[in-house]
Structures are given as structure tokens and as C-alpha cells.
Length: 546
Image (cartoon, rainbow, N blue to C red; front, side):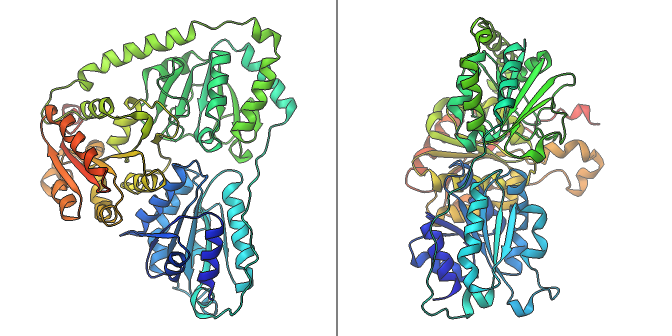
């Protein structure tokens, strides 16, 4: 028995079913021997994205695990760790390391020296007898508090060179802990929620990871308070609900803007309240109540008038218990709020109807979103987007109807992250239709991993908006640079997908969107990845950028 065998057995006991990897790494074979399925990616960053999607799509209840070799494998995986760290996603990273006798000798790249800024917790296994201890601490950190990548680095001599003989694995699966709010704070906040005249609930990813969807819905209905979500929190309250304002990224919805401006109180639950380009800024002059499981988030970017520290489910349960006994609340009626939400939403959709129903050629991206949404069973479909224009186009207009049917990200926006996310989500939810919207710039970053989906029979649907340009960057690329090829790009992504083993077709006219997507969905049912390349407009009014 070697160190890799011990780690594999611990992973098995912890319920790991899939391990994402890129060789060379002895843990891959050890994991396969104990029945853990290895998924070998084409590039480490995408492998991390797959582990990320696996964790996200299961609310962290089944953890994504990624392993890579020492040196270049650990170097290449760094961006994926940074992306997961920015979105607070619990993933376990198991890099190999240089032999202990080579520790701290440059230029050898060691995770312990270089990953500190993008991990929640990390350790190096410096003695084989410490493997169970450090793996136990790793899983505890993954299951307790705010999420984030956890790294356990294993030097080569411990991982594969030393024979451990009759090594006894003293290990039982780890249970995490949740923290509840202070009862006095709960009472104060409950009274404020009742007294507020124009309350908005600002719901984040913490609701999804706590699986506090029922509690959020009950609170919103009790208070008749409209609910907006952050991009990672999208779907926490189904957007078909009468009190749902939608989700916000760089783009937003008219209901969110309308009710945030009108609000006197904003109750943030399961969110970090981080000021970011990829979320809606809260206007000044609001009373802010902030509930998070991480005290470091409180008063970070916004002044919190009141705070509740704890797991979102426990916080909401405590508030609901307090509110049900509040006599003042029982006399209060807010029955007109839902009607106002629906009125503003209808106005907004009417304003956007020319885009959503457009017959333009090249095709309008909003027409694609409308058409795809109209033909899928949204309760049984998981959708994500890529960075840039597809994110800003899809987030406001894809209406979720059930929790965990949309993977929104993130405070870091690495092109190509959506492809790995949707593969991880499909592996975690094989019976669901899994769709990724991405641009031609994004597929240029990670397109070779379509072969991973084909080889491993991961039946995802990729919809590529091909406008032949980096449109969202157009303003920063003056017209004079066009002759140097800095703005426009080319590619036959339909051909790339076919060459890599996927089903694919190209769409150039609006009338062909629905029939082609239907055929693509049928192809995914056999485990074959499908790609629909749609020739779209650039999406910018270039007359504004002479």
C-alpha cells in the first residue's frame, strides 16, 4: 500500500464517486481501483471547473475533487482555484508535490507556497501517518462555514514511492457544523423587517448551499417582500414567483432597479455584499441588514446597520419563528406588492419584446434565449453561461422555475469556465438537460475539452453565440486596430465539435433555432455532447464608438 491508496480509500469512505484529473498522478489509478470514476480533462483549468460545477450543482452536498501532478499540473490548475475561491465554492484539490527532500528549492513549484491567496485552507502531508488527520481536517473545512477550495498537497515520496506495508486506515467520514444566529439579534431584526415600509430581500448563494429555499419563500410571502438574487444566488426563489424581481449581473432587470430605488430597507441573506462589477450596487440611504455565515463579510463594502451571523437556513428559521408570534406583523398587510412587481415586470418585458422576438439576420442573441427557454422543461434543466456578453444577455432573461437549475457566476470571470461547470453539473445530475451558453471567444479558450465530453459520454448542450468578434471589448478596441485583427476572430465551431466527437449544426436564420435545438437535445440523450453554433449579431451599436 502507498500513500495514493490511502487517500483513495478515504475519498471512497467520504462518498466520492468521481475524481477529475489530468495525469501524471498515481492517485488516478488508486481511485479507479476502489470504484471512483476518473474523468480526465484536456486542461487542468477545465478540470477544476468541472469539480466546481459538480459541487455547485449539488449545493456542496457532493464535493468536486480534482487531482493533478506536481509542477506544471499544479501551475496550470491555479486559475481554476482562483475562480472557485472568488465564488466561494467548496472543492478538494489534491496536487502531487516534489519529494520532501526537495522542499523549498526553487524553481520547484509547490502548492503550499503559491496557493495561499486562493484557498480556504491548505496543508502538506509531510508524514504518511498524517494522511487521515489532514484529510479529516480538509473535509471538515469543506463542510463548515463559507465554501472555498481546500488543498492537500502530497509529496511524491509519500504519494507513490514509500511502501506503507500493513497500514491501518483509521478514518471515519467527517460531519460539518452549522452556526446559528444570536436570539437577541434575531428579535431586533424581525422587528425591523415588520416596521420597514419598502423592504427588499437580497438573496445570495448562501441560500442555495444551505438549501433554504422553502424558508426564503415563506419569509417573502409572510412579509410580502420582493426578492432579488445575486448572480450566484439565481433561482433561490423561482423567478416565476409573483414576488421575484430576477437576478442581477452587469445587466439587471427593471424590477430590481425599480424596487431597490424605492426600498427603505435591504435585507441581505446568504450574500457577501461585495461591491463588484458583476452585481447590482445598492443605492445609498438604505437601512442594510446583513446575514452571512462569515463575519469577515460584515461591514466589508457596505455599512451594515444590523447583522445576523449564521447558516442561512438557521437564520431564516429563527426569523420565521419570531415573526409568527409578532402581533404587529399579523395586523400588517402588503397585498399590493406582488401586483406592483408583476406590473413592472410586464412593462420591462414589453420594452424588450423587439429584441426577444427579433427576426434579424445575423440572429439577435435575445431571440435565441427566448426560443430555447420556450421549449425546455425548466424544472429539469440546468443552465449556465460564460463570461462576457452571454452572461449579460442570459442572466436577466432566463427565467428559473426551480432552485439549482441555474449556475450563475462570478466575481472572477474567466472565459471558458462555463464549459467545465456544465460538464460537472451533468455528471452530478445525469437525468437533467444541461445547457451552456458561451461566446466564440470563450470556446476559443477551452474548446478542446469538448473531446472530454465526447470521450466520457457527458451529454451536455453547448450553444455558441458566434458573432466573429470580441464584442463586449469593442469599446476598448479602436477602429484603427481592426486591420491588425485585434477585434475580429474566425472559427467553424460546428466543425470543431464534429471533429472532437460531438453532434453539431449551425443556425443562421431565426426560424431554424427551435428545430435545431430540439435535434441537439435528442442527441444528448445518448450521452453525446451537442453543439449548436448560432451566427449572431455583434450586439453593439458601433455608431456610438467612432
